[in-house]
Image 1 (cartoon, rainbow, N blue to C red):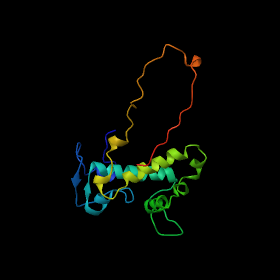
Image 2: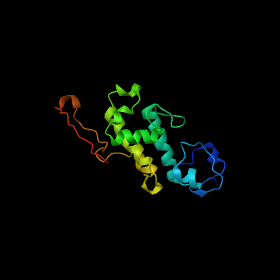
Image 3: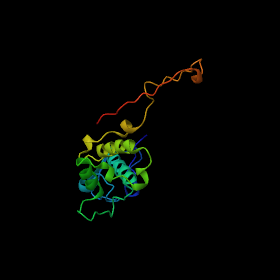
Image 4: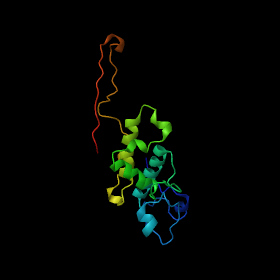
Length: 163
């Protein structure tokens, strides 16, 4: 995946192969812009990583970042999500249509990725290449001469630890 400046407003001020730029005229959609761009007019490749984190959070929560509010507090969706995460209550953030999907643990893992992308300082965010799946080391692509029907099998479980 090659990260690109993705907001339509930014596309007008960014040249073809540019990966960073400083501008006095901030254009774009608030709520999706990285802090360094929204506040200082500086956008980088990792500004797109921040936007990706916002989109991932919106997909998981089923709520838009812009115009969202919570009756109990005035936090935006990112602050609300972080508050729930710190209280060990991430399941309260997950969209109800995903709750019964059987993949809640995978959704919580996606939330971890989301928070990595939403770091305040751009150097603390991962590169998009770190988020792109690569062929796992255990996959070698060889074919067994024996049919798997004739082989006994067992179920192995693994646990993914915290980042």
